[in-house]
Length: 218
Picture 1 (cartoon, rainbow, N blue to C red):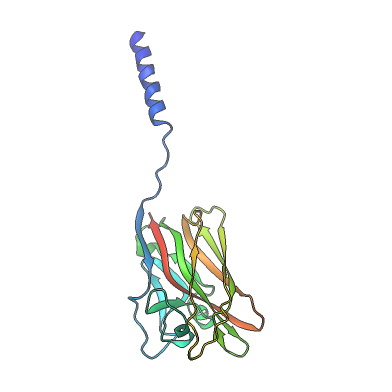
Picture 2 (picture 1 turned 90 degrees about the vertical axis):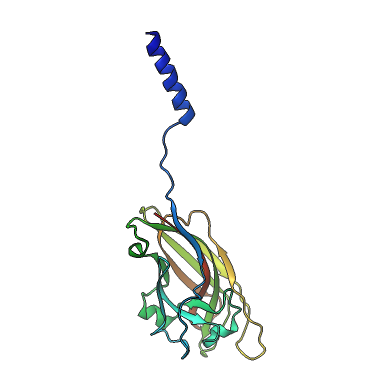
Protein backbone atom coordinates (compact mmCIF):
# COMPACT_ATOMS: atom_id res chain seq x y z
CA UNK A 1 0.00 0.00 0.00
CA UNK A 2 2.83 2.39 0.88
CA UNK A 3 4.51 1.68 -2.47
CA UNK A 4 1.24 2.39 -4.33
CA UNK A 5 0.81 5.74 -2.56
CA UNK A 6 4.41 6.64 -3.39
CA UNK A 7 3.71 5.86 -7.09
CA UNK A 8 0.65 8.14 -7.08
CA UNK A 9 2.65 10.97 -5.53
CA UNK A 10 5.36 10.67 -8.17
CA UNK A 11 2.74 10.55 -10.94
CA UNK A 12 0.99 13.63 -9.56
CA UNK A 13 4.26 15.56 -9.34
CA UNK A 14 5.19 14.62 -12.91
CA UNK A 15 1.79 15.76 -14.25
CA UNK A 16 2.02 19.10 -12.47
CA UNK A 17 5.53 19.65 -13.82
CA UNK A 18 4.73 18.89 -17.44
CA UNK A 19 1.00 19.62 -17.73
CA UNK A 20 -1.23 18.45 -20.56
CA UNK A 21 0.70 17.70 -23.78
CA UNK A 22 0.21 20.32 -26.51
CA UNK A 23 0.69 20.07 -30.26
CA UNK A 24 3.98 21.56 -31.42
CA UNK A 25 3.88 24.51 -33.80
CA UNK A 26 4.85 23.67 -37.40
CA UNK A 27 8.54 24.11 -38.05
CA UNK A 28 9.58 26.80 -40.50
CA UNK A 29 11.03 25.29 -43.67
CA UNK A 30 12.27 28.67 -44.84
CA UNK A 31 11.97 32.37 -44.04
CA UNK A 32 12.94 35.06 -46.53
CA UNK A 33 12.07 38.35 -48.21
CA UNK A 34 11.43 37.91 -51.93
CA UNK A 35 13.07 40.74 -53.88
CA UNK A 36 12.68 39.17 -57.37
CA UNK A 37 15.96 40.70 -58.52
CA UNK A 38 17.31 37.36 -59.75
CA UNK A 39 14.42 36.92 -62.18
CA UNK A 40 15.28 37.63 -65.83
CA UNK A 41 14.58 41.07 -67.20
CA UNK A 42 13.03 41.54 -70.59
CA UNK A 43 15.49 43.73 -72.55
CA UNK A 44 12.79 44.54 -75.08
CA UNK A 45 10.61 46.24 -72.51
CA UNK A 46 7.69 45.23 -70.27
CA UNK A 47 5.71 42.42 -71.90
CA UNK A 48 3.03 40.63 -69.83
CA UNK A 49 2.94 37.79 -72.36
CA UNK A 50 6.56 36.77 -71.77
CA UNK A 51 7.41 37.76 -68.18
CA UNK A 52 5.18 35.85 -65.73
CA UNK A 53 6.56 35.45 -62.22
CA UNK A 54 5.09 31.95 -61.90
CA UNK A 55 6.28 30.06 -58.81
CA UNK A 56 9.08 31.78 -56.92
CA UNK A 57 10.67 30.17 -53.84
CA UNK A 58 7.63 28.03 -53.12
CA UNK A 59 4.95 30.68 -53.70
CA UNK A 60 2.92 31.02 -56.91
CA UNK A 61 2.27 34.66 -57.81
CA UNK A 62 -0.98 34.47 -59.76
CA UNK A 63 -1.58 37.33 -62.17
CA UNK A 64 1.87 38.87 -61.60
CA UNK A 65 4.64 39.61 -64.07
CA UNK A 66 8.23 40.82 -63.69
CA UNK A 67 8.83 44.53 -64.23
CA UNK A 68 11.81 46.80 -63.72
CA UNK A 69 12.21 50.47 -63.00
CA UNK A 70 13.25 50.92 -66.63
CA UNK A 71 9.95 49.61 -68.00
CA UNK A 72 6.71 51.55 -68.54
CA UNK A 73 5.47 53.79 -65.71
CA UNK A 74 7.37 51.75 -63.11
CA UNK A 75 10.41 53.92 -63.82
CA UNK A 76 8.70 56.74 -61.94
CA UNK A 77 8.76 54.80 -58.64
CA UNK A 78 11.57 54.58 -56.12
CA UNK A 79 12.07 50.80 -56.23
CA UNK A 80 12.83 49.41 -52.73
CA UNK A 81 15.08 46.64 -54.06
CA UNK A 82 16.40 47.43 -57.53
CA UNK A 83 16.02 46.59 -60.30
CA UNK A 84 12.95 44.32 -60.22
CA UNK A 85 9.44 44.52 -58.84
CA UNK A 86 6.35 42.51 -59.74
CA UNK A 87 3.22 44.02 -61.24
CA UNK A 88 -0.33 42.74 -61.72
CA UNK A 89 -2.06 44.69 -64.49
CA UNK A 90 -5.29 43.88 -66.31
CA UNK A 91 -3.55 41.99 -69.13
CA UNK A 92 -1.35 40.12 -66.67
CA UNK A 93 -4.35 38.98 -64.64
CA UNK A 94 -6.14 37.81 -67.78
CA UNK A 95 -3.12 35.75 -68.83
CA UNK A 96 -1.96 34.38 -65.48
CA UNK A 97 -4.74 33.60 -63.07
CA UNK A 98 -7.37 36.31 -62.70
CA UNK A 99 -7.33 38.20 -59.39
CA UNK A 100 -3.80 38.85 -58.11
CA UNK A 101 -2.91 36.34 -55.42
CA UNK A 102 -0.10 34.63 -53.54
CA UNK A 103 -0.62 30.87 -53.30
CA UNK A 104 1.61 28.23 -51.76
CA UNK A 105 2.83 25.64 -54.25
CA UNK A 106 3.07 22.44 -52.23
CA UNK A 107 4.72 20.61 -55.11
CA UNK A 108 7.57 23.12 -54.96
CA UNK A 109 7.78 23.12 -51.15
CA UNK A 110 7.56 19.34 -50.89
CA UNK A 111 4.73 19.04 -48.36
CA UNK A 112 1.03 18.59 -49.23
CA UNK A 113 0.01 20.30 -45.99
CA UNK A 114 2.51 23.14 -46.12
CA UNK A 115 1.33 26.66 -45.27
CA UNK A 116 2.86 30.10 -45.14
CA UNK A 117 2.92 33.11 -42.86
CA UNK A 118 2.87 36.52 -44.54
CA UNK A 119 4.82 39.06 -42.49
CA UNK A 120 5.20 42.20 -44.59
CA UNK A 121 5.67 43.58 -48.09
CA UNK A 122 6.33 46.84 -49.93
CA UNK A 123 3.48 48.07 -52.12
CA UNK A 124 2.57 50.87 -54.51
CA UNK A 125 -0.53 51.50 -56.61
CA UNK A 126 -0.23 52.30 -60.29
CA UNK A 127 -3.50 54.00 -61.25
CA UNK A 128 -4.51 54.51 -64.89
CA UNK A 129 -7.15 57.13 -65.63
CA UNK A 130 -9.48 57.63 -68.58
CA UNK A 131 -6.83 59.60 -70.45
CA UNK A 132 -4.55 56.53 -70.22
CA UNK A 133 -2.16 58.36 -67.91
CA UNK A 134 -0.65 56.21 -65.14
CA UNK A 135 0.57 57.60 -61.84
CA UNK A 136 0.95 56.87 -58.14
CA UNK A 137 -2.47 57.86 -56.92
CA UNK A 138 -4.04 56.60 -53.73
CA UNK A 139 -5.87 53.31 -53.41
CA UNK A 140 -7.39 51.00 -50.83
CA UNK A 141 -5.90 47.50 -50.79
CA UNK A 142 -7.73 44.55 -49.25
CA UNK A 143 -5.81 41.36 -48.45
CA UNK A 144 -7.88 38.20 -47.84
CA UNK A 145 -6.01 35.18 -46.50
CA UNK A 146 -7.48 31.68 -46.70
CA UNK A 147 -6.36 29.08 -44.17
CA UNK A 148 -5.22 25.58 -45.03
CA UNK A 149 -7.22 24.29 -42.04
CA UNK A 150 -10.49 25.67 -43.42
CA UNK A 151 -10.79 28.17 -40.56
CA UNK A 152 -12.38 31.55 -41.20
CA UNK A 153 -10.49 33.76 -43.66
CA UNK A 154 -8.46 36.66 -42.29
CA UNK A 155 -8.49 40.15 -43.78
CA UNK A 156 -6.33 43.25 -43.63
CA UNK A 157 -6.89 46.64 -45.27
CA UNK A 158 -4.16 49.06 -46.24
CA UNK A 159 -4.43 52.63 -47.52
CA UNK A 160 -1.81 53.64 -50.05
CA UNK A 161 -1.55 57.46 -49.93
CA UNK A 162 -2.28 59.71 -52.87
CA UNK A 163 1.12 61.07 -53.88
CA UNK A 164 -0.25 63.16 -56.77
CA UNK A 165 2.71 62.18 -58.92
CA UNK A 166 2.34 62.56 -62.67
CA UNK A 167 4.99 60.84 -64.80
CA UNK A 168 7.33 63.24 -66.50
CA UNK A 169 10.89 64.61 -66.53
CA UNK A 170 11.90 66.10 -63.20
CA UNK A 171 8.98 64.55 -61.32
CA UNK A 172 9.98 63.24 -57.86
CA UNK A 173 9.92 59.46 -57.67
CA UNK A 174 6.88 57.99 -55.96
CA UNK A 175 7.53 55.85 -52.90
CA UNK A 176 6.38 52.37 -51.91
CA UNK A 177 4.44 51.92 -48.69
CA UNK A 178 5.19 49.21 -46.10
CA UNK A 179 2.41 46.76 -45.27
CA UNK A 180 2.91 44.90 -41.97
CA UNK A 181 0.43 42.08 -41.44
CA UNK A 182 -1.18 41.11 -38.13
CA UNK A 183 -0.21 37.87 -36.39
CA UNK A 184 -3.25 36.01 -37.72
CA UNK A 185 -1.83 35.95 -41.28
CA UNK A 186 -0.38 32.48 -40.67
CA UNK A 187 -1.34 28.93 -41.62
CA UNK A 188 -2.26 30.32 -45.05
CA UNK A 189 -2.79 28.51 -48.31
CA UNK A 190 -3.39 31.68 -50.34
CA UNK A 191 -3.83 35.44 -50.10
CA UNK A 192 -5.98 37.40 -52.57
CA UNK A 193 -5.40 41.09 -53.27
CA UNK A 194 -8.07 43.55 -54.41
CA UNK A 195 -7.66 47.27 -55.02
CA UNK A 196 -9.98 50.27 -55.20
CA UNK A 197 -8.85 53.68 -56.44
CA UNK A 198 -9.72 56.76 -54.40
CA UNK A 199 -10.06 59.01 -57.46
CA UNK A 200 -12.74 59.08 -60.17
CA UNK A 201 -12.32 58.37 -63.88
CA UNK A 202 -10.15 55.29 -63.30
CA UNK A 203 -9.91 52.39 -65.72
CA UNK A 204 -7.29 50.33 -63.90
CA UNK A 205 -5.43 49.92 -60.60
CA UNK A 206 -2.32 47.71 -60.52
CA UNK A 207 -0.48 46.55 -57.40
CA UNK A 208 3.31 46.81 -57.53
CA UNK A 209 5.07 44.56 -54.99
CA UNK A 210 8.61 44.20 -53.71
CA UNK A 211 10.34 42.73 -50.63
CA UNK A 212 7.60 40.18 -49.86
CA UNK A 213 8.62 38.75 -46.46
CA UNK A 214 7.19 35.39 -45.43
CA UNK A 215 7.96 31.99 -43.95
CA UNK A 216 6.89 28.54 -45.12
CA UNK A 217 5.83 25.96 -42.54
CA UNK A 218 5.58 22.20 -42.92
